[in-house]
Amino acid sequence: MKRFIFFGLIALTILPLSAQTKTGMVPRSTFKIYPDIARFRGDSSRVYVEVYYTFDVSQLKYVRMDDVYRADAVMSIYLKRSSDDSVIVGQSWRVPFSVSDTTALQVSRSYVDVLAFFVKPDIYRVCVVGRDLNNPAQRDSISFPVDLKQIDKSAMALSDVELCSSIVAAESDSANRFYKNSYEVRPNPAKMYGQGQPVLFYYAEAYNLLRNASPSFKSQVTVTNAVGKKVYQMERTRRRANESSVEVGTVKIANLSSGTYTFSYALYDSVENTTTAAAKRFFVYNPSVAPDTLTPKGGNSYLGSEYATMTESELDHEFEVSRYTATKDELNQYSKLKGVDGKRKMLFDFWNKRDENPVTPENEQKKDYMKRVDYANTYYRTGFRDGWKTDRGRVFILYGPPDEVERHANEIDVKPYEIWFYNSIQGGVQFIFGDRTGFSDYILLHSTHRDEMHDENWMRQIQAQ
Image (cartoon, rainbow, N blue to C red; front, top):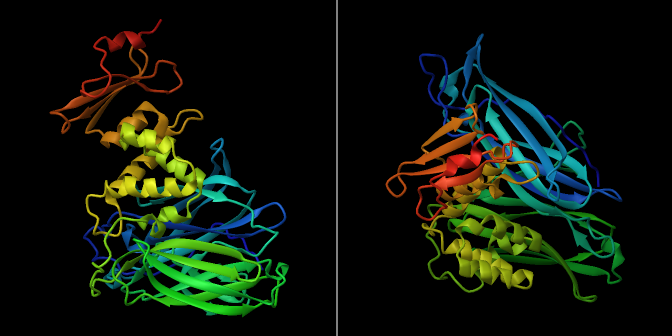
């Protein structure tokens, strides 16, 4: 399998936006990035990883420069080792865009790119950060854990599945960042299909096919909905011809109702009773298709969710960062669970019962909570401690951004402290954090919130000695 590594890829794209303002600038909506990742076989000691991302170029601010309107996105992608939070590999770069006439900027279009890395097998956190150079307030950051295990060498194995917007046969071209193994493979990091994208394309790689003695094996494509019901399945018999193969194909999505689905690709050897599979969740938006109301929620519905493919370490991490919204009974229940299936089901039920709008594809409550976790990790990290574990991080995650912050960093005989004000909680509450150690580790000293710690004499804790 041929491998190419891309860093700092830049493309010029002309995209429709909104009408030009009198200042020559174009107002933008919220800048949002959608990432994805796929793992493939690398060399003897490393895994080959591709990180994909996409965003809507019409969300950028375009500024008149000479005879064109220009915009720039500043992107950073890096992998951090989970055990010590160290950055192992990464890259930052600018992606410029230009258009000569803003009257043509009426329809949004997606910019898609890919970066590839060789890394040693380990548990990592993938971090994707982007901002609008002309409007720094417009930024987005996403991070998520990933267990990058080495591809099994002893038996038939699969890479991760890459969900795509198109796959076409192509001539070898090292300058084409989407070329691999005789195809131009354009990823769909948003994983959204249906209206506007009625066909799901998939790409995977199969390895060690000649290690089994049987002359053939079976491949199976399965799509299940959010409650584990199969809505599509296709199986075919394959003969063993080469040590590895490229697995590509399509699934028509036009008849599926809006919602969350899981795509699964599996290889079976019925003679030697071996199976290997890879799965990925995707979303469908088909407003013209009536929703499926015949299958109620409940039962083993976690099998059709993102938890179905998460490792035990990933599940443990997600529940750990979710503990601020968990009850004592839930914390106790999770601590007693043995085995990955029980943890998958509990996490699914945990967030499902907190979903205030279950008819939408996304769980908005979970999404908002995890965005707060990411923000806390970015801005409240101290030493080797993740931001979500700090007092300021916990308060931010639980109650959201404060309405007002008073910072006291240079007062005489008093160590630095902050006062956070929340005007809409319990008629107005305060949280006071102090840097008692001098290492920017602000701990909670006092709060007027009835469920938080109280110390009316909190000032004595930060008096300079």
